[in-house]
Image 1 (tube, rainbow, N blue to C red):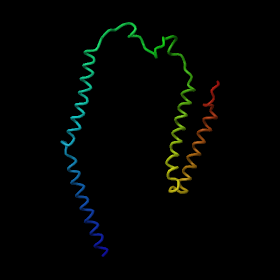
Image 2 (image 1 turned 90 degrees about the vertical axis):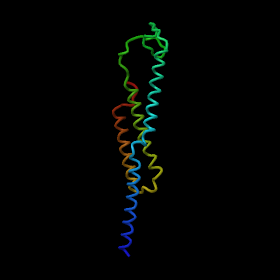
Image 3 (image 1 turned 90 degrees about the horizontal axis):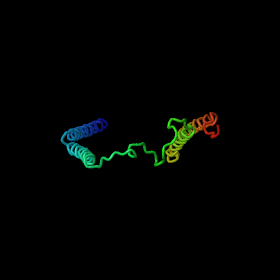
Image 4 (image 1 turned 120 degrees about the vertical axis):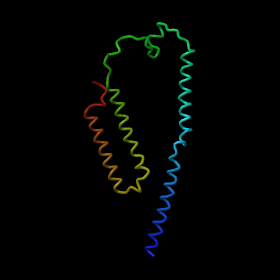
Length: 147
């Protein structure tokens, strides 16, 4: 009996393998990708034609007002190379970093019952690293606004 079971399993596996090989042979025909290639060629052609028509038919009046750099409609004054406070960027990067870390709590909240004690230990370790990073940021003074 055992031998027949293994034999029937092997035959079923062999039939599945031949069916998959047949499907793979059908899907490997290059002509099946012709509609995708045609759509790509039409899309690129449409963009090229529209850009050419707009460049060819559009007005070409270059004035001094059009050639200056445009910055939000405000007249330029001062040097653009003056130093900028980096604290804004540091706070923004830290916000994104800690915000992304909080997002990783969502899968745990969904599956906390099925994860058991191993999942709980992993989350405790994750929170530990989270708090360790936060204390490092506070000790370095990255969140202080005054100099």
